[in-house]
Image 1: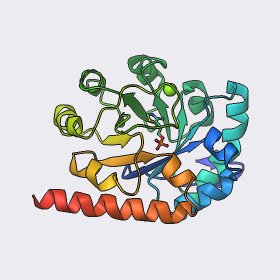
Image 2: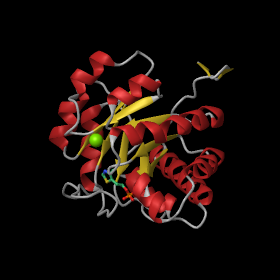
Image 3: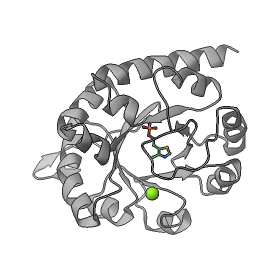
Image 4: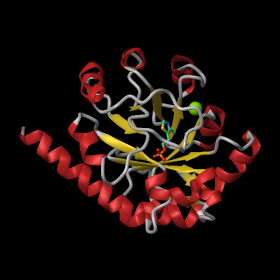
Amino acid sequence: VVRGGFVFAEPTASFDVYVIIDQGLCASSSIDVGRLMKHLSDAGAGAIQYRAKNLSKAKYYQDIQPLLSLARSFRIPLFVNDHLDIALALRTDGIHLGQNDLPYEAAQKLLPENMILGVSTHSLEQAVAAARLKPGYMAIGPVFPTTTKANPDPVVGTDSIRNIKASIGSIPLIAIGGITLENAAEVIRSGADGVAVASCVIQAKEPAIAVQVLKERVAVAKAAREMN
Ligand code: TZP
Ligand code: MG
């Protein structure tokens, strides 16, 4: 990729710890997003998403443009939330779409081959329907109660994760909603391939430590799962 005269290698995404950089959370804690991104990438977050529910498309575009340059220099994959046109215009690593965004099959027709499509699901039925389109990853949630998302869908719980994972085959399943350092292992033991987190990292005293601990707990829980 050539950007501003610099050549950057495309980073590869992993979905063990996927951090949602929620603009509202960052603003209310006076967090510098660029610095946060440096900490997340140093700590080994597999991917990041910029989520801004209260910004116009114009402002979102303005915000994410410099963040993409930083993400490239830190070699961390960056996902756009909601705005497929912005992802296409900037050639981000991926786009994350929910049930009320452009339908996945329409989005897929527009996506370049190397752009990852991530989708949100909130039930087994939605997961089975979305799996037919073979997205790059699938989020399921909220697994636990969350205050980060306004009007969240009903809590899915950990019990249904196993069933959903069994129904979607090899598509990486990322659990989301109310995930913390304390419950991350349980979520992985229930069958998720990774965790998506916002508040537990953004509002941590040291976001880098939070990511390191999450990564460690996800890895240990996966290893234990594979032994059984
Ligand atoms: N979708 C389902 S829950 C959620 C989103 C975007 C918010 C996750 O944030 P937190 O702070 O990790 O609960
Ligand atoms: Mg959305």
